[in-house]
Image 1 (cartoon, rainbow, N blue to C red):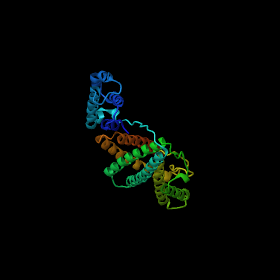
Image 2: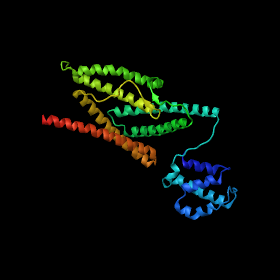
Image 3: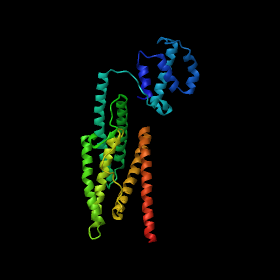
Image 4: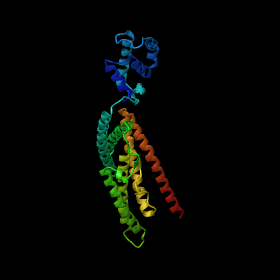
Amino acid sequence: MIRQEQLSQWLGDRQRKYADGLVLFGILAKESMKKKYAAYLDTAPESPHIFDPHFTQLVNCLSKIDKEIKYSPSLYPAALEEIAVVRTINESERKKVIEEKQANITSLEILVNELQSRIDDLENDSESHTEELASLQEQFDEKMSELSALRNECETLNTPGVKIITEESLSPSIRKAYARIKEIAPLYASLHNDVANQDIPERQTIAEELCKLDDERRKLWKQIDTWAEGKGELQLEEKRPILSENSIVRGFEIARQIKRLKNNIANSKAASERARQDNKQTVMQNALDRIEKYETELAILEAEITATQGEKSAG
């Protein structure tokens, strides 16, 4: 819950308490309003009646703040802060709430993985899909925020979470993705050995096949990471993909990755600008974080390409 929602609940509660409203006033009111009313509101009797003039004035002040927040939320940053709501529930209610949240988590995990898969497909497409990608990435960020919040709520309810994630801990769909990764590993290794054999004439074709397998396993690892985010630490036997040490394959992989990163940066910039215009601060920050990560990785790869070209020139 954010503080704006807490304020709306207080204003709509016929049993509202003066003390709770006074706390909201102290957090949300601008300095000009505090100078005008704070001293007077503090002189109210303990637990004043709802028709006490102090109570009436407090309701008027908070109603005005509530209206201004809805029109100009940026003027009240404290209104958008997440707050912890503590209440006591019995065991049967706790289990019911947990079951409902877990069901929502499962649905969101499926949706998030579908969105991630669609994003990956579009990013790997040779054609431009800037607008669709920006929209999909915005949906992905919002659903991931919802998913993170639900997982935190379940943890607050003392749900035993998965801290160390093994193959047995994976959901059926994610276990299928991991099984495919294990299938790819020996295929990749075999083709990699063929590329190293200078007696084989089709080495460039094999290198292209290697890159396709590399793309597939990176996409599958991304699905696993998305599913596991916030759940715990992944401890799986298969190694994550790294760039090949074979110069032919490595050149192909770097070129493909550079193209992908540039597309990702362009799409994330579009998503960031769209979120800024819609005043979606969390979505915008997620996009900016992605841009920073992509640009760092791109700089490393471009530096390697530059260094390689310099060595060839010197030779």
